[in-house]
Structure formats: C-alpha cells, structure tokens
Amino acid sequence: MSLDETIYSEFNTSSEFHEVYTKTTSRIRRILFPEIVTGDEETEAEYSKTSIVSRFAVPTQQLKEAVLDLLNVRAQPQLAPEVVVTNNIPQFVQKLSSTHDQHEVLQAAKMVHQLSKEEKIVVSLASSEPLVDALIRALNTASDEETRRHVAAALSHLSANQLGAAYIFRSGGIAELVRLLRCPIASVINYATTTLHHLLVYVEQSKQEAIACGALEAFVPLLAPQTVIPQSGPNPKLQAMVADSLYFLLLDQPQCKNTFLSLQGPRYLVEILRTESNYIKLLYAVVRCIRSISTHDENKAMLIAIGGIELLHRALKLMDDDKRKLATLNALRNLSDAATNLETLNNLVNDLIILVAQQDDDELVGCACGILSNLTCNNILNKKAVCTAGGISCLARALAKFCNIEDVTEPALCTLRHCTVRHPLAHQAQNELRFAHPIMLALLATGRPPIVKASLGLLRNCSLSNENLRLILNEKTPDGANVLTLSIEFLEETGRELAKDWLGLRDGVSLLEMVEGAISALHQFARDPTSAALILHRPVVMNLLVDLISNPDVNSTNDELLMREIMGLIYQLTKSRDGAKNCNCI
Image 1 (cartoon, rainbow, N blue to C red):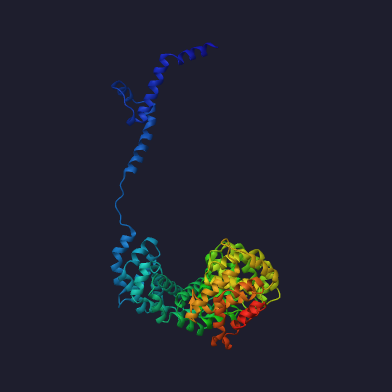
Image 2 (cartoon, rainbow, N blue to C red; image 1 turned 30 degrees about the vertical axis):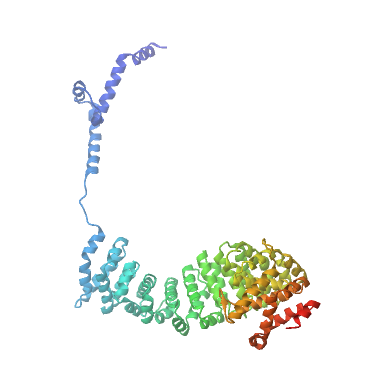
C-alpha cells in the first residue's frame, strides 16, 4: 500500500473524519429542511453563517414555499352550472311565453336547446314543469320553422328524463308532437319521433292519448321516410324508432291492428326486412312489431302471403343475442300455425333443428319446438324435412334434457307425434325413437293433461309397429307402472269428469280430446292379447265405451274420429272368445 493510501485510510477511521462528516451533513440538512432539524445554540450560530450550500438552497426553498402557497389557496366558491340554470329558468319561461316578440322566443328556444345538450343541466330543465309548459305553448304558437325546430330538439332531450316525459304528457304535448310528424323538415320529424317514443316508454297513459291524436296514422308512412320527406333517403335510425313506437301502440289493441292493416303497415314492415339492412336495432324493432300484429288473423294472413316467414327466418340469422332471437322466434311461432300449406320452409326447419340441438336456453328451444310442431301439422314436406335433418333423435334428446319444462316437452312431443304418422318416413321415425321409450313413459306418468295427451298420441303412433309395441308394453316406470295401466287409469279418470261436463276442460285441454287420445292409444295396445284381456276386465272402461257409443254427439257424424277409435278398440277386444262374449252386450 502506498503512503497516500495509508494516510487516507487512517483519516477515514479517525475521529476527525467522523466529526467533519457529521458537521457537513447536518449543515446541509439544516439549510434545506430547517423545519425538521433541531439543534443547539452552537449549531444555530454556525448555520446562520452564509455559505455556498445556503446560497444553493435559496431557490429550493422559494420553490417549496410557492408550492405550499398554491396548495393552501382556497378557491372562491362558485355556483354549479345546474344551479345557475335553475335560477334562470323563470327568465326562460318568460321569454318563451312572449306573445309580441317572436325573436325573443327564438333566442330563448335556442338557449334552452343548447343547454339541454348538457348532461348535468338537462336534469334541472326537465324538472321544471313551468318550463315544459312554456316549450309546449311555444311549439303551438311559433310562426317560424326555426323556432319549432329548436323547441322540438329541446323537448326530445328533456323527454329522455322520466320526469320530463311526464311533464310533457301533462302539458298536453302529444297532440302538438303528432302534428310535427307531418312536418316536411326531416330534423323536426326526428325530434318529434324521439320525444313521442320516450313518452310511450316512460308514461303508460300516453299510449291511449297518442292513439286518440292520430299517432298511428302519422307513424305508419314514416316506416318508409323517403316517400314522405322531400329529398330524403332511407333513415334506419328513424325507421327503428318509428317501428318501436308502433309496437307500443299496437300491443293488445285489436282496433289499432285493423287500422294498421288498412294503412298497409305489414307491407312496410316486410319491405324493411327485404332491404337486407344490417342495422340490428331496426330489424329488432320490426320483428317486435310483427310479433305484435301476428296475433291478428288478417295481419297474419297478409304477412304470410307477402313472404313474412321467409324474411323473418333470414332476420333470425342476423340477430346477435338471445333476447332478439327469442323475439324473432316468437313472431315466427305466431305465424307458423297458419303456414301449413307453404312448401318453401325446408331451410327454416333445418335451422330450427340445429337450434334445438345446440341451445341450452329453454325459452329458445321451447319456441323452436313450437314452430316445428305447427309446421309439421298436416305438412308432409316439413315432416320429411325434420326426419332427414336428424330431427327425431334431436327432439328426443331435448325431451330428456328439458324433461321438467313443459314449454319444451309439450311442443317437442307434438312434433314427434306429427312426424311418426302419415308420411313416407314415418316408420323410420318410429324406429328411431326406440331409445326414447323411457322418457316418453316418464312424461306420460306426470299426469299433466297437455303432456299426457301428446305422449299418448306419440306412443300410439310408435305402437303401430309390432316390435315397437312389444318394447313399449314392456317398459316400466321406477314405480312399476307401464304404459297400459297408466293409459287405463287416465281414461277412467277423464271419463268420469266427461260424464259430468261434456264440454269441460282440464288445464286448458278438452276432456273429450283426452278421452279420445286414451281410447286411440288403447286401440293399438289391445293388439297385444294380454293387454286386451286386461282392458276387458276393467268395467269402468267398458261402461265408458257403452256410454260413448250411445251418446248422440258421438254416434252421429259430429265426431267420426272418436267413433272410429272406439270401434277399433272393440274390434281388437273381440278377437278372443272371452272378448267377443263380453262385447256382445255393447
């Protein structure tokens, strides 16, 4: 080690070094941060001397003091914008109510319009009933289109607030707004439509008022705005709002549905679907409107005639969430019961089968099954389409998957019942259902009239094959019941009820139809000799057959199907010697 290094090392470890180091660091801390360093009188005197470090510290201290001053400055209290606006509302009301200075009215309308665009301020404006009254009066008395435009714009913003919508209704604004729907200025029509739509959404009483003021007649032409607004093209946003407003006016209003039909409303809706618009809000609004009018027979017939079902099918593929898909399926289901003669729905049937297979939502599946049930009723092409698309096994799996949800099982059973009889692939469909016999029997055992009726019909069809009949009769529930005992008990129970009330219903199902379904099923089950013998030894059943045959409503031509099934059952029972003897008294 060199001499310099030795001296440096010794100094670093000496007490002089420690003293110098301590004094220097303390002095720097004292100058830069005097408020946090304390010391004795000797150090106070030492630190008071001017030094290079203290000079360097001056700017730092000044900066720190400036920052502290800024942090401690208290802003002068200012009123919030909404408070200022609230305080000035009486002036707006006064100027809007001016009868001698239209320019003053215009300026006030402009100001309110501009302020209504501000999210915080619009609440204050909408909460003032006098201001809303003044705007409605200005709308009625204004002699120039610019004032009307600004007033209509302001009202459209205020109506987005529920209280504002209520005040517009109470101020009698609906009549003026309906009048604006026939204005030749596109922006005014947009504002009026927006305001009326908000009222229909927020204020229940506004629906009847709007109908009385002619809103339905004013809205319908706006489904095609290019035909009523000069130099205007298609306006999907306006059309969507018009269609949704019409939905509220048409819902549960038979007379309005008649008026809508007379105004060619269904054609306007179908034309919108035909334009292949990708604006989902417009498609959804049109679908909701169709769903509303599709419960009306005349509208339903027109929609089907002009291609409504095919276009709804196309719209279904564009819907991007379950809520919109369900609305479209509901519209299709409403129309499908009157579309049994259409021969253009093969693709729809295929897509519905795919939906049933892939969906876990019971509402969507139930609705799809309802459409399939309607489309396969007396339509051979649609029955074949279900069979060739793998629909039989798909629907059978749906029965098991949604076994406790009647809105799925009842239409699924009905579709399978339709597809297992009276078409070239019926026998194939019957055989495909062999794996589903347990779930079919379990559903029959529920005792629920709609399910029992549909299950009996399906089991009856599947029993047309001797091999299937054997398998079905051998199937048992966990309680040991089989299809024969369940059918007999159901017939005895409903037969007793029918004897008391020939036109009676149980859970919405006709007692006569339930009796007919049970007898029809027993007609096929009785082809088995053991089953026929068991039926013969049920006196309640035999007495019921006698009563039905002697009933004039049955033995006349009023119910040929029931009489045919009764005679078919008796024929099967008489094939044995004991059966022929017991039936001789009938």
